[in-house]
Image (cartoon, rainbow, N blue to C red; front, side, top):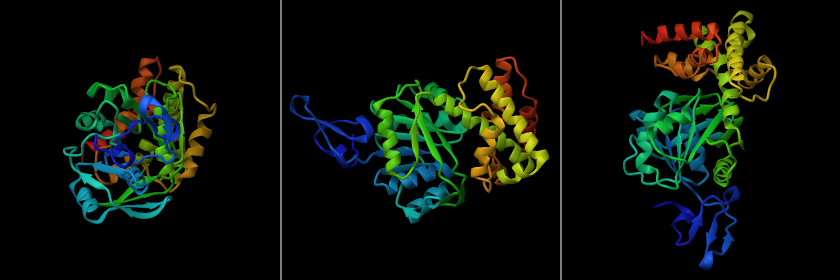
Length: 344
């Protein structure tokens, strides 16, 4: 496989030594350590606000990064002028290889799927040509079920799940993204174990400036983030308010809390182990970190684009019915969002 840096050496490298330290197997498989972490060949499929932030910072850290997106104007801007990432991480413009398809990229060490939830399966199918037997797939989305969507589209036992929190990201224009925060990236194996390869990937992200933690129960983290998404995504969209504006208004905040409480009840009925006891405090603490942010669902509506409603608030009534619960707050806000999108 054509990969940058140490991967091009003639040595047989075990990529998954702890903390990204490549272990080189010499004659007789004697293991020696290389103290400098090798660069990776990475493809980011879905170059929206978050995908572009991932790509820009990972490329700035010295990795060979390819972004893939169907937004031609964005891809052209990145090709011609570089990718500008502005905000909590600083202000930089980075050279990144930009594509509208995966054709010609070649096999990668890591494929990051950063599309909307509805696009995960298509992204996984598009990645087949750049995923070899050793490539890892990391999917980071709002909502539930991303890992299962990948498995339905491509056979792989190398799927990692990620949860991004506290970024408040937005696209300022073609080739230019901004983020208000940079709180935490959580990653874990779909199978729910801690592995060398998981730590290896985490260290690559840390080297790029991200705050990253690995978890043996990533599904818990997905639900904890999902509950926050449910609190703000559709409610902020329905009321056309920032997160801080929602929290400051008693009536609209009661709708947000109603949505979050329903998702929390579903998670507990399903037996999901949550770290918090007070859901109101949980979503309030999350929102207080990014009060000026608009959820991506609201940004989609402002641009007259369809959103991820079915994977976020619209998912709550569906899962609630499976465990014998109702979710009227989420049913109502989801219906309003879908009605507006029918006019786009």
